[in-house]
Image (tube, rainbow, N blue to C red):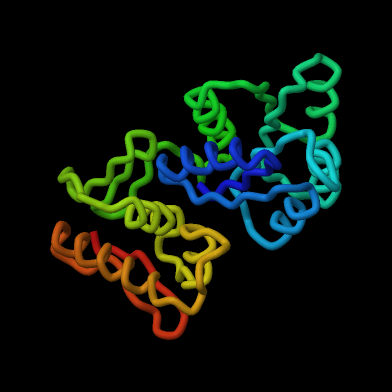
Length: 224
């Protein structure tokens, strides 16, 4: 998933960012409320992890503003303020869940998975198209029952293609969903990684599964 972490404590933000990236997520970090709302306007996030006590604009204000605009991205508030009135205020502001600091990282991951599943079909734990299947919880992908040896980025790319089969996926969309906001959009990294994934899929399936749509992007297709 693409996750926005809003946290002004650099040490805490770095800890969360590193842990989420190790789990295969794409992570952006905002140090204050103003940057958080700006990023939420520019990028499409799957989940926002939102601290309450922030410079410029607090977490309650950020959540309320995003909800007033009709943005439905799940919000998990992270804060040391766990008094009942703060929990109620956070949920009333538009947060979907509340986790008090300090917390165990395993619990954070469990809360993220639970919020992700609320998103409907796109949050299914198992994806399938043609001969390809993916278990998102076990981080395993197969072709006709045979496991694929994929890098983390290849897994994320395949996940996005499986969420949008037979659709043309733009390079810019893949950059946004699979790489973070700091990545150079002029780089050919998308083509390189998609090329590697395409070769692995074709070797396993015996047919080309990812087609290049010249000048636009790529599409996952299958004859099976």
